[in-house]
Image (cartoon, rainbow, N blue to C red; front, side, top):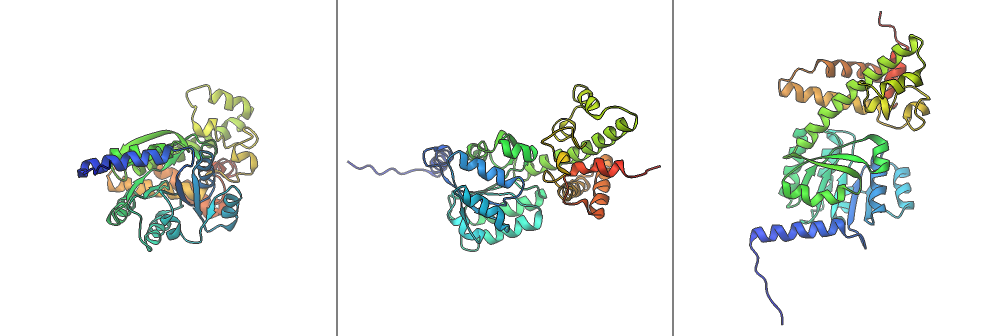
Length: 325
């Protein structure tokens, strides 16, 4: 005997939500996840999705990055539009406003599957987020902003914090996928609020790294052993992520970029970009950010001196070799 079930619009939404949750937690076959942007963070995030049994569809302008994921079993695409058509979820992890927006424009050129869920984990302007959400919504699909914090180490170890902007239902539907890459998934509010949280966090990050670099340099010049002082700092009130996990003094932490000539990690280019975005939203909201502005100027100067591709902890080396008085 066959039954025909008629559902209301609300019931349809509940069924769609239940389906997305099933797709994101089904470990036997996983779901199809598209990942665009396989850089220092994205490559690790994509790998962790595969470890949870999901089928990866990837795109990046770097052939080496794509070949690396292909060797792990991912399917590589030469354009993001075809990738999107094959994916239940699409996650983007890209450098800046223009690249993110242009990528989403490119992804919808061949149409969009209505059940596809788009997630942007880049760090961009909240206004751009709202424009992308509108673009995807007009195609009948869904979108949230979900930038991350935790650095390359967090991406590698799947301990990232995700800051999600979207509706409650969208947050619940995407949470399980994000948990494959992070340990804390926080709903920050409506579209763009994930980015608002991320930019405020990264402004604090830029300020604190400058503070740790300045403090460590002072301690060394006063004759303190840098390892001894780092241990004091990390058991005292000055403790922070920049001092404990990503200490900018070479040789103190073997896994920190400072111990490999500031290679990898979170680049000076990116912290400069993020501090610029934070300055913009501070202006828009009439919020004074004197320390954020000072940190931005320091990193802009470093970038102008050719340090843009180095981890932002290179501010220690910069301060150490500069004369300010």
